Length: 124
Image 1: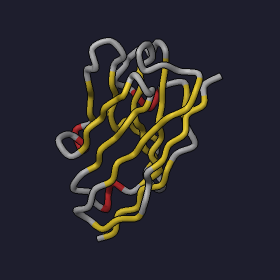
Image 2: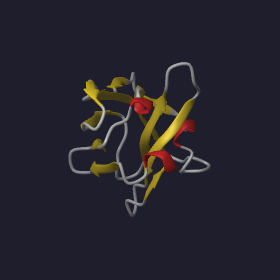
Image 3: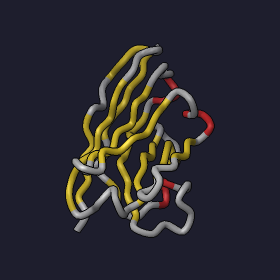
Image 4: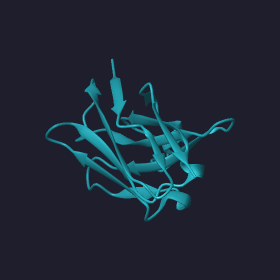
């Protein structure tokens, strides 16, 4: 089975930064697609960013582009999300997700395996 555990969520002021990490078992960043999804309060889950296992190509939903960065340490099997210039609208639960063979790799919020999530709260 796949187990994913996120860490790094916190409460920060607007303009601040956070780094989220994801680790676990039953998956490999060398072979599985991975990414981050978010559920904002009262809204549907959405894609934040994705990364491919072969070339490390990345995708970002436009609202997060150039503020966030996704990276992976294949040797340690850890996925990261660097979050910069945080805004109140970034508030939500952030999930680490993986999928061995997604139909559309940029639609990260449809991936098969999800962690428990970590809360990010941004105050103005």
